[in-house]
Image (cartoon, rainbow, N blue to C red; front, side, top):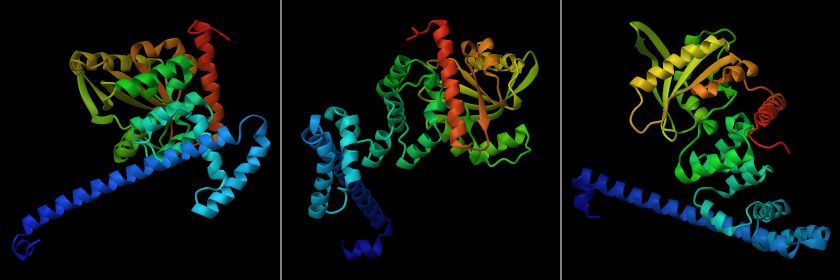
Length: 354
């Protein structure tokens, strides 16, 4: 670069610097992506060779000792990264994703550390859920870990559906970028980040949500956009106020959230149905789906919700928790809810029993 450029034209110098910065950053990203891709393919191929050549058939027990020997030799030759544990992770990686074409389609979107979290999930449908959501919402490894720890799959409405429905909804999300309400709605919602005290009002809850709006939206998903707080609507000269109004891009729907500090009551249905019909008439744009509503309440009765058939009105009722309960308690409650929902589906004849 000439002295005239350096000394006399700071704007031009800044322009050149900005171009070089973008070029370097872009090149580094490509290099990192290439390294990540090669690393993942290397691990897959190592896992495949060991699985097929060492661990198959009657040589299983002998094979495990052979893996230990291989680990020692590879570590001595190539350094860290080839411990016994890592080799078995590579084997499990191959076992979980035996088709190389699938791996190749994922390596541009996931890191090896993402795959380590995913292969630790033994349930295939559950693993497919986290894989699809991770790609759809571009989760970091830390976010993936947090979502698994908070039992997102079990809290999502889709977990209470037949396996065929789950797979079909995940395929639509991957291929068409469209999300079903069952993939969106959750129960309960974990709002521990709001740091609410023991006694608070609906206004306090609403204010806390807006103060932590980014984290609140992340609990719902990255395609969730905030539109309005206490939106006023007028019906027959009477004013009503909608607590929180959002828009979901992949569902192409307005989503109304109503906050209730107490237990869900049947009269809440009529109130929210009125709001939904107004939104459908006055706010819904061409090409959008019908608005949905989420009633977030401190408590709810599953039987009451079932009898009211709220899903036919586009209303979902969910409990919110201001503190993360012990995992074993949350897990027990969620598994009971899933079992109860599947039993009801069987009784309705949605799919054959057994």
